[in-house]
Amino acid sequence: MKTLYRKIRYAEEVNNPALFSYLLEEVSEGVCNTVEQRDISFTQFQLLLETMSDDQIPNHWRQQCLEHIHKPLFKLQNLAVGEAALQQIKGLFYQLSIKSNELQASL
Image 1: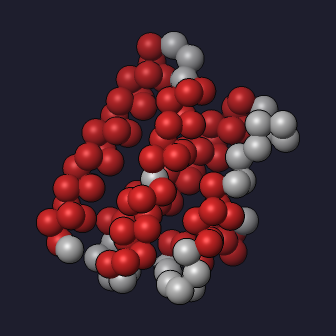
Image 2 (image 1 turned 90 degrees about the vertical axis):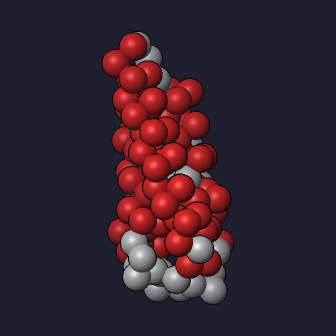
Image 3 (image 1 turned 30 degrees about the vertical axis):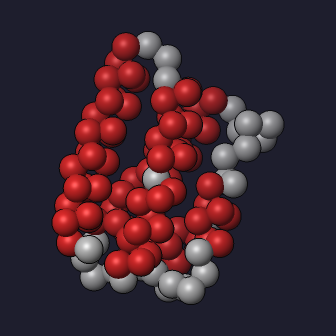
C-alpha cells in the first residue's frame, strides 16, 4: 500500500486516475474490523487532503483528490460512535471545506 500511497501523494502516475479506486477499495468490511476501517479511512482522508493542498501537484490530480475525498470521510462518519468521534468528523468536514475553497480559488 505504501507504493500506492506514494503514487497518489506525489502524482507519480497522473494519467492513471484508477489509482484512486484502488486506494478506496482498501477498506473491506469483511476483512477489516471497525477500528482498522476507521484507521484506514482516516489515513486515506489525510492522504487526499494533503495531496489536494499541495500546489506543486498538477491541478487535475488535485481535483481528482477533491472528487474522491468524500468517500473515506463518509465512511468515517458511518463508523463514528459517540459524541467525541462525531466532533472529530465535524472537524474533518471543516478542514475539507477550507481546503476545498482554497483549491477552487486556485484553479
